[in-house]
Image (cartoon, rainbow, N blue to C red; front, side):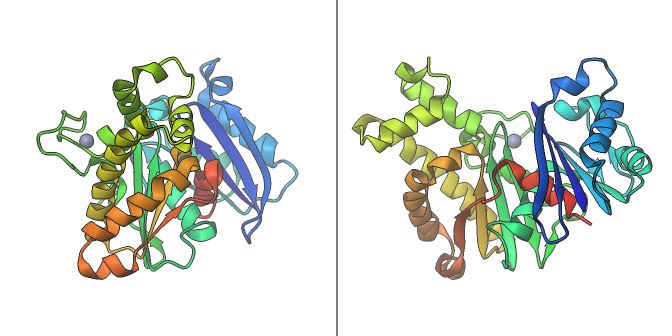
Length: 299
Ligand SMILES: [Zn+2]
């Protein structure tokens, strides 16, 4: 049995998977449950022990946002939710206490690896996986291996490919990054700017898609602008990595039937001759389990 823990921005997802990829246990907790007393790492390890107590684990992994030194297992950055664990040797801490080989991986790469092994990317020769969430996640699998590049960042910065050199400044230092237009957060912001009447909805995007489903004319231009921008980002990634499959994930893709047809049309119009004919655009299949799956099977 393999243990996979996905440490997200607000939730912690923990899965135990059989060797052939069946989820035996999958639980989701609020992160706040583990942070309240200031002993986050100890609490996470105790939680992992509790969830896995009836199973014989052979390996495990933790997926987390940020820059992980894959050799040492230390989380090296100090931004986002992972800041609470920054500088700690997570690989050693979990591995010793659980007494199993343990890996720590970037969450976007783990998501991509999960989709490659058990989801929409199965059988692909090269895959780019993009997740539209709070940020814009990106990761690449080439020749059956997660792509790392010359450092741990290889393939992860797809959200920071610029699609507009005069665009707004991005915290990353670039301008007009794809993330500023096409993360779920940015998309919701664009929808509200164009359609202030949707502002008071708890869930702006589902409401926006409802109105599109009802063929309310005035909402379509905002959808078209989003599709145009996302298509450019996808084409740039296709030209960079040469995938045969691009997998798109995130809650926004619950409305894939509205987003995809025109998006695919633009991608195939803009992509260079050869990939134009063969690259497939697919929707992620493992939902919120993908990163836990991926990190469980990373080694
Ligand atoms: Zn950027």
